[in-house]
Length: 205
Image (cartoon, rainbow, N blue to C red):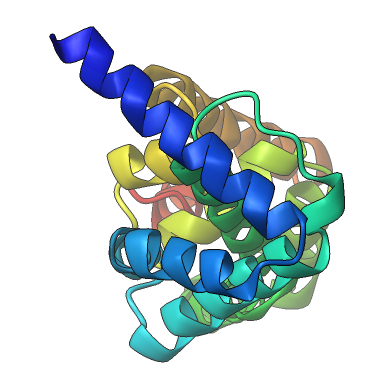
């Protein structure tokens, strides 16, 4: 009985999608009514900002309507919208406000440890080393770094990126090692204690 119910839902989604592809605005409005609440809830979990979440959702529905003729469903309509939302969110992280805030965090952190660093090396040189190292990270690893600066948990990051939590943990651990290696390569005289202090401040446990 459960399988039959699921087939009916899929058939309804397929029919709804077909009407939308044909330009049926009433069908589009029904789709928004069916899925907007759940998608907004997910967007809020990711962004933790009501206005930002609403903007993401509006963009998703606007993109869906604009590109409706080229959209082919391989799974559920809700699943397709969810993937669109996730893609929009990741673009926000990679190019937008969250990425900028992560960069600002790096600068703020460097100012906090500047007095310790000045006894050993120029703070600006150390900052440049870290900035270069972060810029060379693989895309997913940069996203993990940016989201950790926004206090997202590793589990939340895994959900946002559509990855296994262990994969994100592996990225997190490798990120720490890469920054340590970058610092040691450019500043071989840095003490172990200072190295730990800097990396621990940037890569939250």
